[in-house]
Length: 170
Image 1 (cartoon, rainbow, N blue to C red):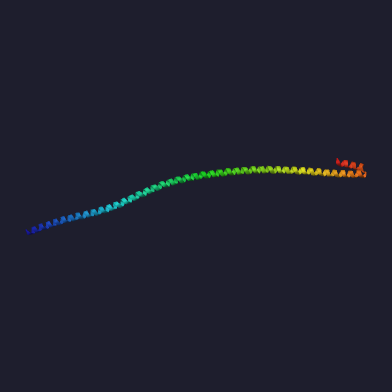
Image 2 (tube, rainbow, N blue to C red; image 1 turned 180 degrees about the vertical axis):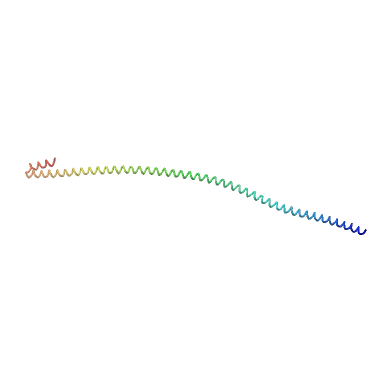
């Protein structure tokens, strides 16, 4: 019976050891579970932080996109204003150039008319001067004839001189 008691005692020890093992396993599992939970919690915290950072980045990206769109809109508006202003300046410059060209043409036409009038006046004055010169030469010729006649009259040769003067005077 001793053996039986010994077996029983051994079985009791085995049960106790099994219970201790089960408790140790349970304790170890709890610790592993707690460690795993801590790791998961830490990972969750990291993921939460990453998620928050990602959300912040998305918000920044959204704001940058909105600002970029606003800048694009303003740039487009400024480009349109620049083009309008450039066109207005070009039109103004063209109208000013046309006005200058018109004034230049008017001045050229006026100068041309004045030049033509001056040439006509110069020609008329030259003709008048030539007529006066011719008339003066005739008068000088008549004066010489009259002086010659006077000389002939004084010298007594009047009848022949009169005929010559009359012919020349005609």
